[in-house]
Amino acid sequence: MSISSTKLQYLIQDPDLDSDLRRIAQKIAQNERISFEEGVMLYEKAELAYLGVLANYIREQRHGNTTFFNRNFHIEPTNLCVYDCKFCSYSRLLKQKEEGWAYTMEEMLNIVKQYDEQPVTEVHIVGGVLPQYDLEFYSNLFNSIKKHRPELHVKALTPVEYHYIFKKAKVDYATGMQMMKDAGLDSIPGGGAEIFHQEIREQIAKDKCTGEQWLAIHEEWHKLGMRSNATMLYGHIEAYWHRVDHMEQLRQLQDRTGGFQTFIPLKFRNQDNQMSHVAEVSVIEDLRNYAIARIYLDNFDHIKSYWAMIGRNTAQLSLAFGVDDIDGTIDDTTKIYSMAGAEEQNPAMSTKELVELIKQVGRQPIERDTLYSVIQDYQDFDFPEEYKPKFYPLPVINS
Ligand code: V47
Ligand code: SF4
Image 1 (cartoon, rainbow, N blue to C red):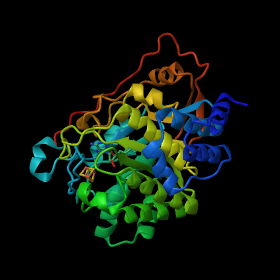
Image 2: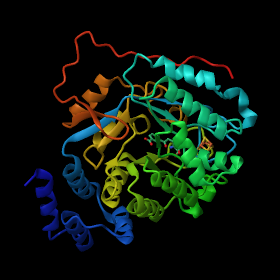
Image 3: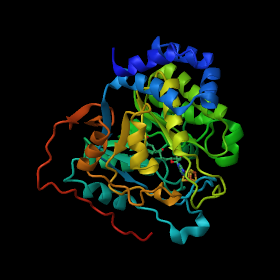
Image 4: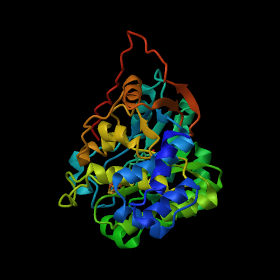
């Protein structure tokens, strides 16, 4: 019996443990799904140590010691946005345009070309919503990137942008997603999900696509045989049951399609946004949340802690609380989190740094591509003595 399963058995037999929590532990040992009420109960009464035993058991059953990462970079087309999400520190409304940028097609292709000699496997494209970035623009962008570098995986936009551009072009979701696939889109990242429940969504992300629309767009994408991720913005004005409701909606869609790969909880950061008065939650709450996500989402293969947002130390800790993926090298190409107050002001890690971060906590680093095919096992990899990380700063572009 493995250590994680011995620990789980110990909990199940602990006469001092609350009987509800003992029953949930028993369910996990028998590979049974927990209910909505049990999910809420975990948030309300389970301690971190208990959750760690359950989540780590599931994580090790699925992935053993493996921890995934990839080599990626981001393109954020613009930080101007027609929406006004209260938690967003990134968007500059049109009236603050002097603080904004809006790349042209050529400028974005130049960013892609900067990585020509680099072994990156994925470009993650997401940013604000603007009328000039319409269906035709994005089709041309995806098309041009694929023409230039066919093997580079294009993980781009969220239902927030898709809903907007499809509505403007008067095409339905199914037609629109087919057009995106034909243009070269490979997968959809998890953004824009926030909290699905209308009661919260209306207060923090009014006007952009609803929870139902977010789910419907992913469903159409999955029907095309394609994959996507899902996020949840937690730790602001939502109650625990809103988080469970969010995960329940994802679990139900995943039962229907099987198209989600990874769930990424995103901790609300409160710097420089309209919700700065809302305190951020503790690290303990972050770890409890990762663990409950691992327990609840029994049909998701992967749980990711996004190191650029949560910080390197918490990312390391999360690997004992259900997480098996910490995202990628990033190369200082995203501003969403640094502008919201994340510790990483210029998020970039070389492959060697990522590998060492994972090995330091006794896990086995595996480089993956976006669809989780293994590229390289770094457990016994010797980096050459002269190895130096290469950073390619983005050009300063005045829009
Ligand atoms: O949808 C914005 C979030 C998301 C704040 O799929 C904030 O692999 C916290 O979705 N505090 C975009 N979060 C990022 C995203 C993502 C990131 C990494 C990997 C993947 C993936 C997806 O960022 C937005 C929003 O939920 N966000 N502002 C903030 N102040
Ligand atoms: Fe716009 Fe996205 Fe910021 Fe909302 S979270 S204001 S949609 S950039």
